[in-house]
Structures are given as structure tokens and as C-alpha cells.
Image 1 (spheres, rainbow, N blue to C red):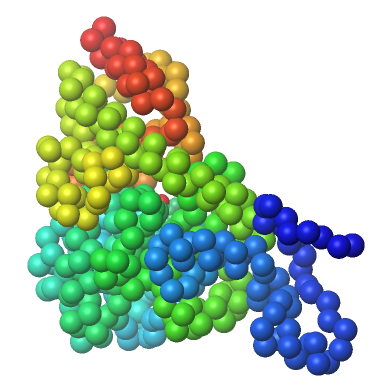
Image 2 (image 1 turned 180 degrees about the horizontal axis):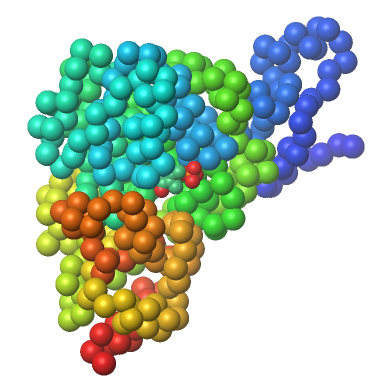
Length: 376
Ligand SMILES: *Cc1c(COP(=O)(O)O)cnc(C)c1O
């Protein structure tokens, strides 16, 4: 067989590569492909795309976003080390910090990153890592990445940022001083809600350390998932630019709706950290495809509202090409006491939206007609 250069990157659905002599074996072990858990062309190709997008030195592809997070933490932290983590964080990451890491002798302090003084006060001589998401779920609170980088670096710690809600199309955390960027590629990066994967982008020196731990943990991404991600990533710029612009437009429209008491999106002037948003993001239309809003706490009417929506539907994921909504009080924040949730601005009337690639005006019209149930 004699292949030409394929126009699309082929799927290497293969667990091992063959060798014909000991000379070739030695060569492969040093620089080429051997066994699938060690290395695979689809993961490598995808890693190069992610490095380009995040403007980072090197990237590794994992079985999931959580695989990327846990493998990286297990590499860079040792017993006795201390982590400062944003309290407003993805549920499983919260559990990793508060339940899993302590079993390995790693201490964590979770504080509210809205006030940067909280982070400074939490610093200890043993602090090795500061961890945050760019935008918190579902309130969209922004982490001040340059300020966090400054605190981390002046105390000999690393800054690790989860870019899942924003993606490199909105912001490149490394350019603002982050040392490690993690993405759950399951969400916006793949964009099609049909595959799971995660990535880490950082220095080559650090990926060289994480790579062997990934082999031990068994967390490298499956080649087929990596191939699906590569396909999804070809449209990331088109999708995200549309999703982010539509989210900004929908946020404005919802804010003007008489049944909506509050909308959270960094582009809004009413957003408490709008000035910080303007500093970190290039424009109102390139901040995030995510938003949240609050409607009256009337469960019967909320059910009717959900049933009346034609385009958006409930799903426990985000970042897909179709608009999805989710209800934090019954999902991500269901275990938190009501008064604590309310202090964070999360009420039973809150919905989180992941805006898809539908026409923005169609989405506005759909939400407007569904919200009319509150006037009945
Ligand atoms: C989904 C998600 C993760 C975990 O990613 P998986 O691919 O589901 O393991 C981590 N962080 C954020 C912000 C997420 O939304």
C-alpha cells in the first residue's frame, strides 16, 4: 500500500506499533510510537492543536478533564504541600481538593477569589499551587488571573487555571501569567457533545514530568476520542465566536425582560466585575458562551417555562452546538445549604445557559415567548 498525504488526520485505532529489529526497537523506544498508553499519533496531533490555541509550549491529552486535573496534581504536589483553591469551583474539582488530596497528605485552603486579599492571607510557606477557573459556575465571577499569577510567583507557587467555560478563543491564561492551563475538552472544545477528553498545557519541562505519571494513572486519552476532538476543534473558532456573541446578545435581551430579575454575563454593565472583564477579554462578544439568569421561584411556572422552550433543553453538560440549560439548585449546588447558596447569588429561580450556534434572534424569541408563562 502506498498512501498519499491524507487531507484529514487519520484515526490510529491501534494499540501497538511493530518493529523488525532490535535497532528499530531502540529507535522506537527513544523517539517513536510503541504502545497506546505511552504514545499515540491522535493524542499528539490534538496536543499540538491545543498548544497552538493556548499559546503554550506543550500539551498532553487525557481521558477526561478530571483525568487531566488529578494526574497533574499528583505530579506536582507532594505530602506536606499546600494548595489555595477558589471556593467557587467545579464540584468534582472541589472534591479532589477537599477529599482526595488530603488522603495523600496535601492540604488545601478554599477561599473566595473575588477578594484577592483572601488569597494573599491564605499563603503559607508550603503553598505550591493556586487553582481557579476563569469564570465560576454559575455566577460567572471572574478570577483576576494577572493578580493571582503575581501572588503565586512572588511566593514560589504555580498558578493553574481551568479554561473550560471560556476556551482559548476567549482568553489565553498563559499570556496573563498562568503556568498550567487545563481544559475539559468534553465541553466547548469538542463542541458536539459526543466524546470525553481533557488537556493540560504548560512548559515542556512540566509535561515531561506529567507524562510518566499519566502512564501510571492510566489517564491518557483514547485515540478515538482524540480523533473526534481533532475533528471538533476544526470549527472551534467559528463556533465559539458565534456562541460568545450570541450569549452577550441574549444576556442583554434577558436583562430587559420583565420576568427576569438578574442576568450574569461578564459583558453586562450591571456585572460587578465588568471592568475586570474588559481588562481580560478582547471584546464583549468574546467573553463566554455561558450565562445565568434568575426568574421567579415558582416551581410550577418554572416547569411550564421549561416545557415551552423550543430550542433550549435541559442537559447536564455545556459547550455543545445546541443551547442547553441547567438548574444549579437541583444539580451542581444541590448539596449546599440554601442560605449559603443565596449568599453566592444562587437561588431556586436561577438557570444556567450554555448558548449554542442557533440564530441569536431565534433564541431571544424562544426565551421571550417561554417567559410569558410568568405573566399568566
Ligand atoms: C466538565 C468540567 C470539568 C471536568 O471535565 P470532564 O471532561 O467531565 O472530566 C472540569 N472543569 C470544568 C469547569 C468543567 O465544566
